[in-house]
Image 1: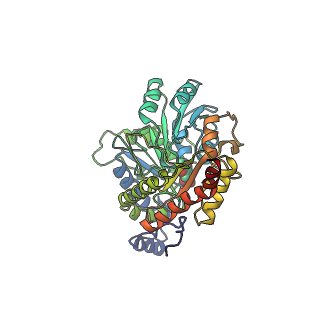
Image 2: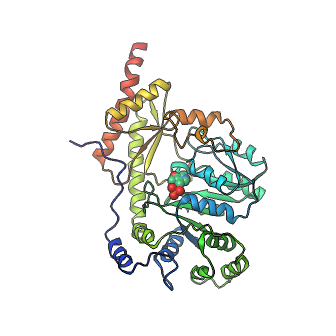
Image 3: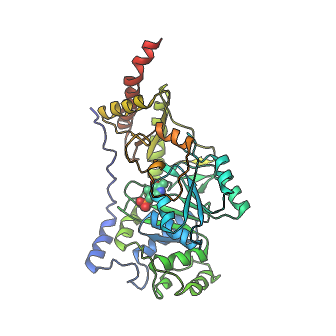
Length: 405
Ligand SMILES: *Cc1c(COP(=O)(O)O)cnc(C)c1O
């Protein structure tokens, strides 16, 4: 018999990481700027930029640190207003507050994507920059967003923490805006416990971010322009910003880079299997009249490691009973808005200087369910998860429906 899988366990770190970790332990060479060249963090940056197709990458301590540095690197003044979706993780508006800016939230629809009409309306509210948080890897209409922001010359930061491997019109998510930020925290596609990376083609922006991430004195010399780039743009930018910026020390250690690098080869397989698992379970859930997985947008090819779906026709008590029934059957369902102190429910972000009411986003959060679905799961485990969810919905809704007819 197949038991409910532990969906919180990560995949093992590839064995090929061992030798490099052993070398780092032997030499104690854990700091990115100790070696003259080719430190694991530097190699990670080169490999990640090549994988995404960008000129530059800067590895840092978390995606939140990458978002913070992106905002600082844009050179926005104190109290600049930054627009972001009302459905995201609390760390994202926190990075805005950390950078002395003001987060402004916009509405998200019941397909977990930005409501473009509301986005456009709020974009005219004295907005200096935008963070598009691709929450749970769901891509909003980036054609519309980029057109609206480009027309107003508003820079776009992509929070692609959970979108590694996702594409939009075949282009990597994280490379559509001015800068893209990714996470290596354990619940993301590539896991080093903690870690993040930002990618951009903007030499001035990356030079500022490199220095602020903690490249003191002339350690920035270990950050090189990509092979074949003889423009001198990066060197000129470093010269321009020498001694002019604070050092926030948000660097990544060589040990984390050694854990990340061998996983980059695993990304295509994890993306492929994660998408197949997601689409298989989505088909099974959509067969239930009580559950609905929203459609993705046409230009998007997803890289999911979890599944989100909406309950249909359930009231709050029934939704709670559904989650309890699923738990009883061995599958944990998070209903974003129904659990106490949930970090993805905007009304819990009491640190916000401004708190709008977002009725559409709130309604979505009150019935949107979240189940982890790691790429390593196999068909029997997927069937068990889908059966538990559709069965739990029937436990709660089936009899009521029968009595009503
Ligand atoms: C995980 C996550 C973050 C935060 O990433 P950290 O590396 O933990 O700081 C930000 N945004 C989204 C959408 C995430 O999923």
